[in-house]
Image (cartoon, rainbow, N blue to C red; front, side, top):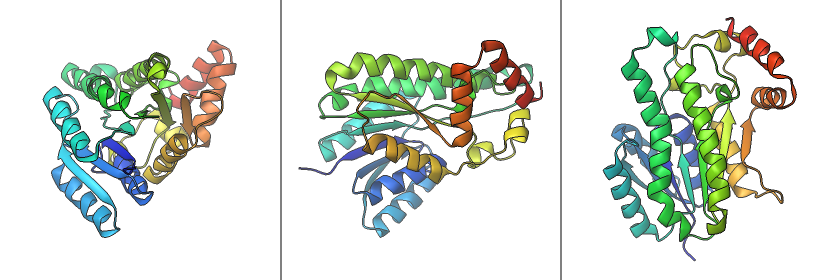
Length: 260
């Protein structure tokens, strides 16, 4: 049997890079894709030096032609698609009205449109691979709308709903769809970011923490279906509070943490 495969977007740095290295170390044939060709070259060198296998390619997740070509090439080379990890995303923080509309729309296009396109284009390959999985990067900022992260949180809330819907819809094809939920992660995405929430809660997770969470979620299937995986203590506490506390209390807590 051929080795299992994983196709990762946004793989040149941060969470994507850490995840690619981890899965390669576990014997996966890694497909690493990004718009950062230099970062991909460095990643490939590290994986190859450790004896792993990797294919890289340029992929703008908003470009349908890129998706079609890169998925077809990867599948032709490996013959299967065990896991698709929709990791690519962008974040801009600040007051909603101070961020230009074009930036808000780009956040929507990448964070939501990229996930939507990836799952649509990857479906035939996932369907034809027994026990295939999709991992969508969500965010604890989507548990309740966050001031200064309005459009970012909105995309992650939409990803949550899309994940839930397709996990149900695709179960007949033996495709599992899950979401991982970190809070703030110490990557370039949050460099220089200063919001009320980051000041009060801090940036406590590393890219390796999230990669470990993705590995655990995909390598150990629970007996009862599970869709959402919070990463880190803070995300778990916030998710539990949002689930069991009254809505007014959840709103008050978010307002407090955000300093709004």
